[in-house]
Amino acid sequence: MTESAKDRRAEFEAQLDEVRVRTGAAESDQRWATLGLVLAIVGVVIAIIAFIISGSQGDTRDVLSSVILGLVGVGFTLLGSALFLRYSFARFLRFWLLRIIFEQQADD
Image 1: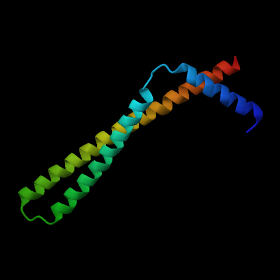
Image 2 (image 1 turned 135 degrees about the vertical axis):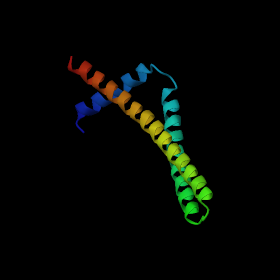
Image 3 (image 1 turned 90 degrees about the vertical axis):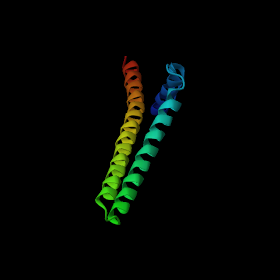
Image 4 (image 1 turned 180 degrees about the vertical axis):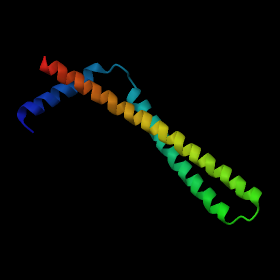
């Protein structure tokens, strides 16, 4: 990195520390993204277990119960993925917007 790039980065980080518009948002976003990731993983595990269980059942009613359990797992996976994507993408876009604002101020 050149010296001017290091100076610009240090100035950018200093201005980020000053901006702190939403206090505690980073922890909250991280918590929701982690919850979404855990929920997605649990949903995949539930769906796989339901699939394995349904293969060893002979009665149609038991198989349908396993299908319902598998659909619950798929629902958890979709919900968890949506939560994870929403909060991780929002964090990225927030940083990106701050960077664009900083670069525009540096150009002026």
